[in-house]
Length: 267
Image (cartoon, rainbow, N blue to C red; front, side, top):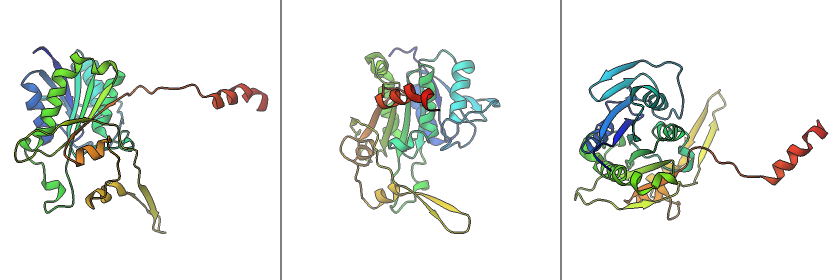
């Protein structure tokens, strides 16, 4: 892409998050970047929208008292309406699997952009748990996000011109932590894993505890996801790129058509 490429950058960890700074610095080397990002952490809010949001100028662009979806709507409709692409991230923590897509604020920002017909990339960093260093103490420096930044900037430079977004509305990118050697990880085109292990337990006293068993299995080196899925790719050290669509498609369904035809005869 040319030097005139313009990008709206948002996230769900907040505008001052280190992963956000990493992408801002990387993309700014070749594009005009405007930050329109939440003022604070908005993780796992999905596509939640607000009626009104407060906006303040920030050294990187705009700080918004709202959700990632708010930021995309405010940005594309008002603050920077003529951008070529939206990038969301880099999230600290992976966004893997089909079941996560609707929950993630990072991914939801890309989905919102897709409804505006603006190409989008959601980028997240896989931070392993269960080691000697607690999860929250990892990935604290811009340099730790270099694998995610490298893949995202490559895709921004080349995917628009290559026609990628003629088939996909957005890309969900998950990158591993950078290796000490500095050697880049390869990119693998993947599909979201369909593994789902949410459980709920009632304690008998009015509380139901919801539990996602997938991360627990991963910490125990139990990875049942088949080859070609996003989770297997990133855990094995590759950058996962899932090309996805956001405007929901519908298909003809003969059984449902038949029910519609007989509806007035039965009610």
